[in-house]
Image 1 (cartoon, rainbow over the protein chains, first blue to last red):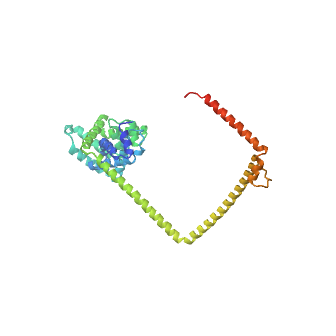
Image 2: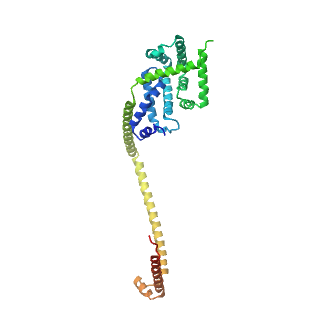
Image 3: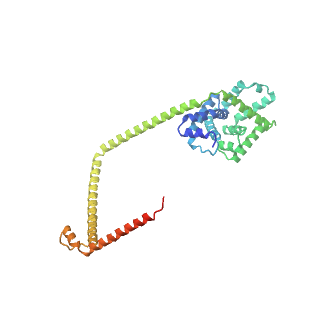
Length: 180
Length: 164
Protein backbone atom coordinates (compact mmCIF):
# COMPACT_ATOMS: atom_id res chain seq x y z
CA UNK A 1 0.00 0.00 0.00
CA UNK A 2 1.66 3.21 -1.17
CA UNK A 3 0.41 6.78 -1.18
CA UNK A 4 -0.50 6.30 -4.84
CA UNK A 5 -2.85 3.40 -4.12
CA UNK A 6 -5.96 5.52 -3.30
CA UNK A 7 -5.53 7.46 -6.55
CA UNK A 8 -5.06 4.24 -8.51
CA UNK A 9 -8.17 2.73 -6.91
CA UNK A 10 -10.22 5.85 -7.64
CA UNK A 11 -9.02 5.84 -11.23
CA UNK A 12 -9.94 2.18 -11.61
CA UNK A 13 -13.39 3.00 -10.24
CA UNK A 14 -13.84 5.47 -13.10
CA UNK A 15 -12.64 8.72 -11.53
CA UNK A 16 -10.41 10.12 -14.28
CA UNK A 17 -9.62 13.21 -12.18
CA UNK A 18 -7.73 11.09 -9.66
CA UNK A 19 -5.52 10.04 -12.52
CA UNK A 20 -4.83 13.71 -13.22
CA UNK A 21 -3.17 13.97 -9.80
CA UNK A 22 -0.94 10.99 -10.63
CA UNK A 23 -0.01 12.58 -13.95
CA UNK A 24 0.98 15.83 -12.27
CA UNK A 25 3.06 13.93 -9.73
CA UNK A 26 5.03 11.78 -12.18
CA UNK A 27 5.09 14.00 -15.25
CA UNK A 28 8.59 15.36 -14.62
CA UNK A 29 10.09 11.94 -13.92
CA UNK A 30 8.71 10.51 -17.14
CA UNK A 31 9.69 13.59 -19.11
CA UNK A 32 13.31 13.40 -17.88
CA UNK A 33 13.52 9.77 -18.91
CA UNK A 34 12.05 10.14 -22.40
CA UNK A 35 13.80 13.44 -23.10
CA UNK A 36 17.05 11.52 -23.45
CA UNK A 37 16.06 10.04 -26.77
CA UNK A 38 13.57 12.58 -28.09
CA UNK A 39 14.48 15.11 -30.70
CA UNK A 40 12.89 18.16 -29.10
CA UNK A 41 11.12 19.20 -25.92
CA UNK A 42 7.82 19.14 -27.80
CA UNK A 43 8.58 15.58 -28.92
CA UNK A 44 9.34 14.56 -25.36
CA UNK A 45 6.09 16.16 -24.19
CA UNK A 46 4.17 14.19 -26.79
CA UNK A 47 5.82 10.92 -25.75
CA UNK A 48 5.17 11.74 -22.09
CA UNK A 49 1.51 12.24 -22.93
CA UNK A 50 1.44 8.92 -24.80
CA UNK A 51 3.03 7.23 -21.80
CA UNK A 52 0.28 8.45 -19.49
CA UNK A 53 -2.46 7.51 -21.92
CA UNK A 54 -1.03 4.00 -22.24
CA UNK A 55 -0.63 3.76 -18.49
CA UNK A 56 -4.28 4.75 -18.06
CA UNK A 57 -5.42 2.06 -20.48
CA UNK A 58 -3.24 -0.58 -18.81
CA UNK A 59 -3.84 0.52 -15.23
CA UNK A 60 -6.00 -2.54 -14.53
CA UNK A 61 -2.90 -4.70 -15.15
CA UNK A 62 -0.97 -2.93 -12.37
CA UNK A 63 -0.74 -5.53 -9.61
CA UNK A 64 1.43 -3.59 -7.21
CA UNK A 65 4.35 -6.05 -7.31
CA UNK A 66 6.58 -3.13 -8.32
CA UNK A 67 6.04 0.47 -7.28
CA UNK A 68 3.80 2.60 -9.48
CA UNK A 69 6.82 4.72 -10.41
CA UNK A 70 8.78 1.68 -11.64
CA UNK A 71 5.75 0.36 -13.50
CA UNK A 72 5.30 3.75 -15.15
CA UNK A 73 8.98 3.86 -16.06
CA UNK A 74 8.61 0.52 -17.79
CA UNK A 75 5.79 1.88 -19.95
CA UNK A 76 7.85 5.02 -20.59
CA UNK A 77 10.84 2.92 -21.61
CA UNK A 78 8.81 0.86 -24.10
CA UNK A 79 6.95 3.88 -25.48
CA UNK A 80 10.18 5.85 -25.94
CA UNK A 81 11.87 2.92 -27.68
CA UNK A 82 8.95 2.41 -30.05
CA UNK A 83 8.80 6.17 -30.66
CA UNK A 84 12.44 6.29 -31.69
CA UNK A 85 11.95 3.26 -33.94
CA UNK A 86 9.02 4.97 -35.61
CA UNK A 87 10.66 8.32 -36.17
CA UNK A 88 14.14 6.94 -36.88
CA UNK A 89 15.48 10.30 -35.85
CA UNK A 90 18.22 9.05 -33.60
CA UNK A 91 21.04 10.81 -35.41
CA UNK A 92 19.20 14.09 -35.65
CA UNK A 93 17.98 13.86 -32.09
CA UNK A 94 21.51 14.11 -30.79
CA UNK A 95 22.22 17.26 -32.77
CA UNK A 96 18.96 18.89 -31.79
CA UNK A 97 19.46 17.97 -28.17
CA UNK A 98 23.02 19.27 -28.16
CA UNK A 99 21.94 22.55 -29.70
CA UNK A 100 19.21 22.97 -27.13
CA UNK A 101 21.54 22.10 -24.30
CA UNK A 102 24.02 24.71 -25.47
CA UNK A 103 21.27 27.33 -25.47
CA UNK A 104 19.84 26.32 -22.12
CA UNK A 105 23.14 25.65 -20.37
CA UNK A 106 23.33 26.99 -16.84
CA UNK A 107 26.04 29.41 -15.69
CA UNK A 108 27.64 26.60 -13.68
CA UNK A 109 28.17 24.65 -16.92
CA UNK A 110 29.87 27.60 -18.51
CA UNK A 111 32.45 27.61 -15.76
CA UNK A 112 33.59 24.09 -16.61
CA UNK A 113 37.10 23.83 -17.88
CA UNK A 114 37.69 23.22 -21.54
CA UNK A 115 39.12 19.73 -21.00
CA UNK A 116 36.01 18.62 -19.20
CA UNK A 117 33.82 20.15 -21.87
CA UNK A 118 35.73 18.28 -24.51
CA UNK A 119 35.25 15.06 -22.58
CA UNK A 120 31.56 15.77 -22.22
CA UNK A 121 31.28 16.49 -25.89
CA UNK A 122 32.92 13.18 -26.77
CA UNK A 123 30.72 11.37 -24.26
CA UNK A 124 27.63 13.03 -25.69
CA UNK A 125 28.52 11.84 -29.14
CA UNK A 126 29.24 8.35 -27.87
CA UNK A 127 26.01 8.14 -25.91
CA UNK A 128 24.00 9.49 -28.83
CA UNK A 129 25.61 6.83 -30.99
CA UNK A 130 24.39 4.03 -28.73
CA UNK A 131 21.23 2.10 -29.68
CA UNK A 132 18.18 3.59 -27.92
CA UNK A 133 17.72 0.59 -25.63
CA UNK A 134 21.33 0.75 -24.47
CA UNK A 135 21.18 4.51 -24.06
CA UNK A 136 18.14 4.27 -21.82
CA UNK A 137 19.67 1.39 -19.90
CA UNK A 138 22.81 3.32 -19.02
CA UNK A 139 20.83 6.45 -18.19
CA UNK A 140 18.54 4.51 -15.89
CA UNK A 141 21.59 3.01 -14.23
CA UNK A 142 22.91 6.47 -13.42
CA UNK A 143 19.61 7.68 -11.98
CA UNK A 144 20.69 8.18 -8.40
CA UNK A 145 17.63 6.64 -6.77
CA UNK A 146 17.28 3.67 -9.11
CA UNK A 147 18.18 0.18 -7.89
CA UNK A 148 19.51 -2.51 -10.19
CA UNK A 149 16.41 -4.71 -9.84
CA UNK A 150 14.24 -1.74 -10.82
CA UNK A 151 16.43 -1.01 -13.85
CA UNK A 152 16.17 -4.68 -14.89
CA UNK A 153 12.38 -4.66 -14.45
CA UNK A 154 11.96 -1.47 -16.48
CA UNK A 155 14.05 -2.80 -19.35
CA UNK A 156 12.45 -6.25 -19.24
CA UNK A 157 15.73 -7.97 -18.43
CA UNK A 158 16.93 -10.28 -15.71
CA UNK A 159 19.05 -8.60 -13.08
CA UNK A 160 22.20 -10.46 -14.15
CA UNK A 161 21.58 -9.68 -17.80
CA UNK A 162 21.10 -5.99 -17.00
CA UNK A 163 24.32 -5.96 -14.98
CA UNK A 164 26.29 -7.54 -17.83
CA UNK A 165 24.88 -5.12 -20.39
CA UNK A 166 25.58 -2.09 -18.23
CA UNK A 167 29.10 -3.30 -17.60
CA UNK A 168 29.68 -3.65 -21.34
CA UNK A 169 28.26 -0.22 -22.12
CA UNK A 170 30.37 1.44 -19.44
CA UNK A 171 33.42 -0.43 -20.70
CA UNK A 172 32.66 0.70 -24.24
CA UNK A 173 32.36 4.32 -23.12
CA UNK A 174 35.50 4.16 -21.06
CA UNK A 175 37.49 2.52 -23.86
CA UNK A 176 36.35 5.15 -26.31
CA UNK A 177 37.29 7.94 -23.91
CA UNK A 178 40.71 6.58 -23.02
CA UNK A 179 43.36 7.89 -25.42
CA UNK A 180 45.27 4.99 -27.06
CA UNK B 1 39.03 9.67 -17.80
CA UNK B 2 37.35 7.56 -15.17
CA UNK B 3 33.93 6.28 -14.21
CA UNK B 4 33.30 9.39 -12.13
CA UNK B 5 33.44 11.52 -15.27
CA UNK B 6 30.80 9.30 -16.88
CA UNK B 7 28.68 9.50 -13.73
CA UNK B 8 29.07 13.29 -13.61
CA UNK B 9 28.14 13.49 -17.26
CA UNK B 10 24.89 11.59 -16.77
CA UNK B 11 24.07 13.53 -13.62
CA UNK B 12 24.60 16.83 -15.42
CA UNK B 13 22.48 15.60 -18.27
CA UNK B 14 19.72 14.62 -15.88
CA UNK B 15 19.91 17.98 -14.13
CA UNK B 16 19.55 19.78 -17.44
CA UNK B 17 16.48 17.70 -18.27
CA UNK B 18 15.00 18.34 -14.87
CA UNK B 19 15.34 22.06 -15.53
CA UNK B 20 13.57 21.52 -18.84
CA UNK B 21 10.87 19.42 -17.17
CA UNK B 22 10.21 22.19 -14.67
CA UNK B 23 9.25 24.47 -17.55
CA UNK B 24 6.70 22.00 -18.94
CA UNK B 25 3.18 22.96 -17.79
CA UNK B 26 1.25 20.31 -15.79
CA UNK B 27 -0.61 18.00 -18.15
CA UNK B 28 -2.92 16.32 -15.64
CA UNK B 29 -6.04 18.35 -16.41
CA UNK B 30 -5.37 18.28 -20.14
CA UNK B 31 -4.93 14.50 -20.09
CA UNK B 32 -8.07 14.00 -18.04
CA UNK B 33 -10.06 16.02 -20.57
CA UNK B 34 -8.51 13.97 -23.38
CA UNK B 35 -9.33 10.69 -21.63
CA UNK B 36 -12.93 11.78 -21.03
CA UNK B 37 -13.34 12.80 -24.67
CA UNK B 38 -11.91 9.49 -25.80
CA UNK B 39 -14.18 7.53 -23.46
CA UNK B 40 -17.25 9.37 -24.72
CA UNK B 41 -16.19 8.74 -28.31
CA UNK B 42 -15.56 5.06 -27.55
CA UNK B 43 -18.96 4.68 -25.89
CA UNK B 44 -20.64 6.31 -28.89
CA UNK B 45 -18.70 4.07 -31.26
CA UNK B 46 -19.80 0.97 -29.35
CA UNK B 47 -23.45 2.07 -29.43
CA UNK B 48 -23.25 2.78 -33.17
CA UNK B 49 -21.60 -0.58 -33.76
CA UNK B 50 -24.36 -2.37 -31.86
CA UNK B 51 -27.06 -0.52 -33.77
CA UNK B 52 -25.34 -1.15 -37.10
CA UNK B 53 -24.76 -4.79 -36.20
CA UNK B 54 -28.41 -5.22 -35.17
CA UNK B 55 -29.64 -3.61 -38.38
CA UNK B 56 -27.36 -5.77 -40.51
CA UNK B 57 -28.54 -8.86 -38.66
CA UNK B 58 -32.22 -7.97 -39.09
CA UNK B 59 -31.70 -7.18 -42.78
CA UNK B 60 -29.72 -10.35 -43.37
CA UNK B 61 -32.28 -12.46 -41.52
CA UNK B 62 -35.17 -10.86 -43.46
CA UNK B 63 -33.35 -11.28 -46.76
CA UNK B 64 -32.46 -14.86 -46.03
CA UNK B 65 -36.02 -15.56 -44.85
CA UNK B 66 -37.46 -14.15 -48.07
CA UNK B 67 -34.95 -15.91 -50.27
CA UNK B 68 -35.41 -19.28 -48.59
CA UNK B 69 -39.09 -18.83 -47.74
CA UNK B 70 -40.13 -22.18 -49.28
CA UNK B 71 -37.53 -24.04 -47.30
CA UNK B 72 -38.39 -22.09 -44.22
CA UNK B 73 -42.10 -22.81 -44.61
CA UNK B 74 -41.42 -26.52 -45.14
CA UNK B 75 -39.14 -26.51 -42.14
CA UNK B 76 -41.75 -24.92 -39.90
CA UNK B 77 -44.48 -27.29 -41.17
CA UNK B 78 -42.24 -30.24 -40.38
CA UNK B 79 -41.43 -28.73 -37.02
CA UNK B 80 -45.16 -28.31 -36.33
CA UNK B 81 -45.86 -31.90 -37.24
CA UNK B 82 -43.06 -33.08 -35.03
CA UNK B 83 -44.41 -31.04 -32.13
CA UNK B 84 -47.92 -32.41 -32.66
CA UNK B 85 -46.57 -35.94 -32.67
CA UNK B 86 -44.54 -35.27 -29.56
CA UNK B 87 -47.63 -33.81 -27.90
CA UNK B 88 -49.66 -36.90 -28.70
CA UNK B 89 -46.99 -39.18 -27.30
CA UNK B 90 -46.75 -37.06 -24.18
CA UNK B 91 -50.53 -37.07 -23.68
CA UNK B 92 -50.66 -40.85 -24.07
CA UNK B 93 -47.86 -41.37 -21.60
CA UNK B 94 -49.49 -38.99 -19.09
CA UNK B 95 -52.82 -40.77 -19.45
CA UNK B 96 -51.22 -44.17 -18.87
CA UNK B 97 -49.41 -42.91 -15.78
CA UNK B 98 -52.61 -41.35 -14.44
CA UNK B 99 -54.50 -44.65 -14.97
CA UNK B 100 -51.78 -46.56 -13.22
CA UNK B 101 -51.75 -44.17 -10.25
CA UNK B 102 -55.55 -44.28 -10.02
CA UNK B 103 -55.47 -48.08 -9.87
CA UNK B 104 -52.83 -47.99 -7.13
CA UNK B 105 -54.80 -45.33 -5.22
CA UNK B 106 -58.02 -47.37 -5.32
CA UNK B 107 -56.30 -50.54 -4.17
CA UNK B 108 -54.58 -48.65 -1.32
CA UNK B 109 -57.85 -47.00 -0.27
CA UNK B 110 -59.71 -50.29 -0.22
CA UNK B 111 -56.96 -51.96 1.80
CA UNK B 112 -56.87 -49.14 4.38
CA UNK B 113 -60.64 -48.53 4.69
CA UNK B 114 -61.64 -52.16 4.43
CA UNK B 115 -64.06 -51.44 1.59
CA UNK B 116 -63.97 -54.36 -0.74
CA UNK B 117 -63.56 -54.09 -4.41
CA UNK B 118 -66.31 -56.66 -4.86
CA UNK B 119 -68.94 -54.38 -3.34
CA UNK B 120 -71.56 -53.59 -5.90
CA UNK B 121 -73.06 -50.50 -4.21
CA UNK B 122 -71.91 -46.86 -4.33
CA UNK B 123 -69.62 -44.95 -1.89
CA UNK B 124 -72.40 -43.88 0.56
CA UNK B 125 -73.71 -47.40 0.78
CA UNK B 126 -70.21 -48.72 1.28
CA UNK B 127 -69.58 -46.28 4.11
CA UNK B 128 -72.84 -47.07 5.92
CA UNK B 129 -72.29 -50.81 5.62
CA UNK B 130 -68.71 -50.68 6.79
CA UNK B 131 -69.14 -48.17 9.69
CA UNK B 132 -70.38 -50.93 12.04
CA UNK B 133 -67.62 -53.32 10.99
CA UNK B 134 -64.43 -53.84 13.03
CA UNK B 135 -61.89 -51.99 10.80
CA UNK B 136 -63.50 -48.60 11.51
CA UNK B 137 -63.66 -49.33 15.26
CA UNK B 138 -60.01 -50.26 15.24
CA UNK B 139 -59.23 -46.86 13.78
CA UNK B 140 -61.40 -45.15 16.44
CA UNK B 141 -59.34 -46.81 19.14
CA UNK B 142 -56.08 -45.93 17.44
CA UNK B 143 -57.05 -42.25 17.13
CA UNK B 144 -58.32 -42.16 20.70
CA UNK B 145 -55.08 -43.58 22.08
CA UNK B 146 -53.10 -41.22 19.89
CA UNK B 147 -55.10 -38.20 21.07
CA UNK B 148 -54.68 -39.10 24.71
CA UNK B 149 -50.92 -39.63 24.21
CA UNK B 150 -50.66 -36.25 22.51
CA UNK B 151 -52.48 -34.51 25.39
CA UNK B 152 -50.27 -36.22 27.96
CA UNK B 153 -47.16 -35.24 25.99
CA UNK B 154 -48.19 -31.59 25.79
CA UNK B 155 -49.04 -31.58 29.51
CA UNK B 156 -45.60 -33.00 30.34
CA UNK B 157 -43.83 -30.45 28.14
CA UNK B 158 -45.75 -27.56 29.72
CA UNK B 159 -45.00 -28.73 33.26
CA UNK B 160 -41.30 -29.35 32.66
CA UNK B 161 -40.48 -26.31 30.54
CA UNK B 162 -37.39 -24.36 31.48
CA UNK B 163 -37.74 -20.69 32.44
CA UNK B 164 -36.54 -18.35 29.67
